[in-house]
View 1 (tube, rainbow, N blue to C red):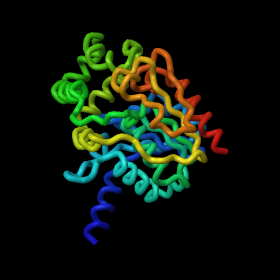
View 2 (cartoon, helix red, strand yellow):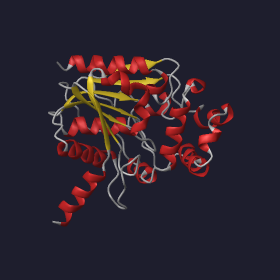
View 3 (tube, rainbow, N blue to C red):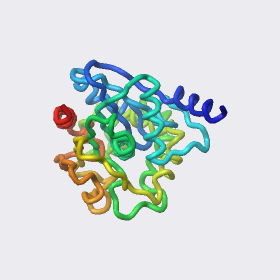
Length: 273
């Protein structure tokens, strides 16, 4: 009974945004992010899909219960259970960074429910798993938390945007004020940030995704967060996956190349028909 109550509480606290019409498309953000990260592509996706963006535990509007499992496989289970609770049986799927890894775990765990999968700079595709938190990412969290109150004003200035986003996006000058502010507030308020980080340690994606699910993996040519030399191992991805590199694109392809991202999600969905 206690386990059932705990699961029910977690499902209630897992927040999602729903918009658009068509076949369901589930979007999963990355570490320290939130469903707001999809704003640059959401309006376009709404034209073809019922878009469901999820806030992972301790991110965005979803709460975090201390001690709950936060590894990618467990996060995949939370999202699958949440979709059950809102009666979303089958769906297309896309995720960025940690969300891409979670999406791959979902496709492996529930292949009868996932229609197609588009991974945007997915984590977990490395030969040598991390055994400690990545210092640069920890610094990003520290800076965001300590500057969150100043962000609404500071992000009007190029210096602040460069400091916060030049390592994430080669097109940081083109990012909107809203995108930068959303991202800063998301990481500053992400209580689940370090638990999710620790949940990835000493792990990599090693599950099987059947060929019946069309899979597209997209990385940017300027991804400094998950660089090609260490974190883009094609042999770990599903053997049938379509692998694409976007030019002038960093770790968030939906920011740098939104039209191309929408195009590839739609192409993957068409292959599932």
